[in-house]
Image (tube, rainbow, N blue to C red):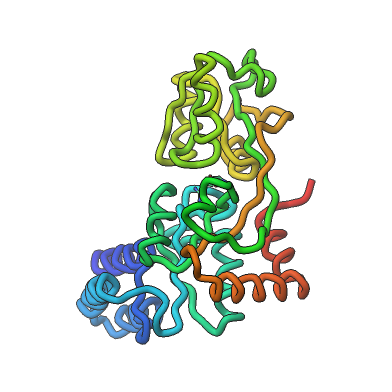
Length: 283
Ligand code: ARG
């Protein structure tokens, strides 16, 4: 029984991780739990498989499901807690979907796959602490902004790098495809080397191992990563100031309008502050 339970858990996690979950029949937690109780240990993995298969065939945005693309390597906005993706963006979008009378489905993917997934219709909306940039506006439409952010510099304690100007000629780690990557790439002309990692956390690991001199990443995940490790600090001076928004397929003004209306309502009734307050403590 122990082993089959473990298999069940793994199957459930796989379902959550893949962000699957079919449109009409939500056969996730409830049914799998039921299977555990009745000792019908074969039912759940099969369900999970059916769901995974069904997911590929259906198109997004039908049947009252709002599909959100994200990259769950970005605490506190989106990250894994056990097998679940949690965080500010997930909660905001769940509340937005509820306002729209829809159910949220989360799809985890590489950060630089989110915009292509929006454009191809694989997901309806990207919510990933995504900074509004002119370049991205050429490929997607953005909702109203919902957070202010900055790219911050993480260094080892005792580093000679004291501010953005000192990054020249240094080896800088960033998460691939992020604004940190974009802006640091400009520094390549000044002799800096940019190391691009799939996960921000991997850049922080490389810094700890002295493989790189600094990490440029958004302020909130920077705080989380620095808290998790010894001997790192965030420099006071920000590298850039930015704003986050949700991204949708170019020309889908209806979805932008609906999300904006929901965001306005959630802002007015205090839900947004409440969600942010759960994850970020004001200094
Ligand atoms: N704000 C930065 C950008 O838009 C980084 C976002 C990274 N988000 C994530 N979920 N990994 O490029």
